[in-house]
Image 1 (spheres, rainbow, N blue to C red):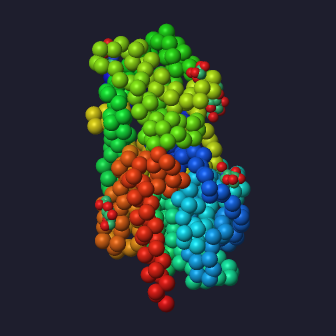
Image 2 (cartoon, rainbow, N blue to C red; image 1 turned 90 degrees about the vertical axis):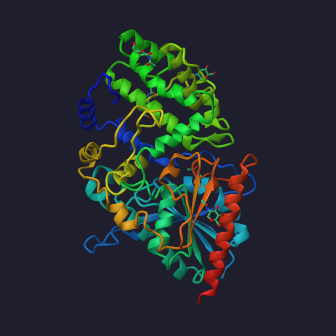
Length: 497
Ligand SMILES: *[C@@H]1O[C@H](CO)[C@@H](O)[C@H](O)[C@H]1NC(C)=O
Ligand SMILES: *[C@@H]1O[C@H](CO)[C@@H](O)[C@H](O)[C@H]1NC(C)=O
Ligand SMILES: *[C@@H]1O[C@H](CO)[C@@H](O)[C@H](O)[C@H]1NC(C)=O
Ligand SMILES: *[C@@H]1O[C@H](CO)[C@@H](O)[C@H](O)[C@H]1NC(C)=O
Ligand SMILES: *[C@@H]1O[C@H](CO)[C@@H](O)[C@H](O)[C@H]1NC(C)=O
């Protein structure tokens, strides 16, 4: 909380633990980790999405022997272009959500299937979508959630592939390449690291495998968000930075709260200091989301967005220094409405709009509260947000209150190698320069070969999306380089007996 703010930090932390509110800042940081829910409707022209939906009996626990139950893992198969025997398999390592959504939004795989004579397989991550080991009630029981880990998910993928290869005629010698974006990209990279006998190579797009404690500075993420605003319009970042104080000023009176609520067309008027915290958290999340989906073409998200949406937002935030708090906040409300009301169909703005308790969200919260500890912080100087330190203890307390478990800060580094991954090979890490998640990504080449492909004007896993006329040259080059490496890996695999 900013110095001079009107709620002491401790009260806020207590509020967060007591109410388990999803808008508390630590959890807001968590929420923005739910990165791949974004992207929008596929831009499909000539590659229709046709797949078969199948289910595979997976062990609930691959690593212990007491729990012997199974669950049905959903996976999607598209074999229209597959050339057996031996045609390659492109295998999407599913993320924290409904696999059909990722399938529909990974146009890159659909567009290259024919060229490779490849079968496409999209495997759902356990505990998401339809792949629920214990039914939906499992989310309320952390004994069941206990088996929701990335290690178990990778084991699911390996077992599924082994099974496909042994049961599908013509697949026995098919080289498999894993593909994923975001958390799915992390899984794709880790899959190659842990199961190199199962996949010949991996594409990890926008995969922040280094966003873990001690690997990158916690402020980098929000710095990139800020840079996106800074480059998209005159004074844009500076005015967002000023807006927090303006909100604090204006909201210090009842009439100010009312004015703010009306100015932002809020569905529920702001009444209390806690409402204002929620409101600011919601705005912050809005700017973060915009940075992730700052795509060069119109795209659909929660709401449709214009091409280069941050530039449009920044048109309302170009004030010079002499502007009143009310004028500034008017600009901020116009800017927020670009995001929430681009189509003009919003009747009001809902500050809990992204705070729903959807299954995907709860599952990801649990993962963030156990293995996927990703420190985030802001300082208000190098970024445009209110200063907030990374507070592992507060985060851990929130997790404990929510799920009865505490995060293990160092585990991801121990199990996946942290920055010490040069002993691995055949992994492409692609990152967009506009994407805040590139902060935790592999953005330089390592021996191995581990290849890093930078897409300077790309947002979150732009390369995995359908190609588009407005794609910048950098993403076209990235895709063709990815194809080149895929071909090389497949050739190598075919040479090896
Ligand atoms: C994905 O596409 C399929 C086929 O067009 C459709 O049936 C399904 O509803 C889509 N899924 C999502 C989440 O959009
Ligand atoms: C907020 O109020 C303080 C004190 O009245 C004032 O100095 C400042 O300019 C106001 N606005 C902002 C954005 O800080
Ligand atoms: C959204 O835009 C429409 C059309 O411009 C406008 O009538 C409506 O009031 C806007 N909604 C909000 C919440 O501002
Ligand atoms: C705001 O969003 C929340 C969460 O999706 C929902 O429960 C609530 O009904 C919405 N409120 C309004 C006024 O639309
Ligand atoms: C890594 O090496 C590849 C191949 O030489 C090159 O195309 C790419 O630009 C390099 N990546 C970075 C981040 O320098």
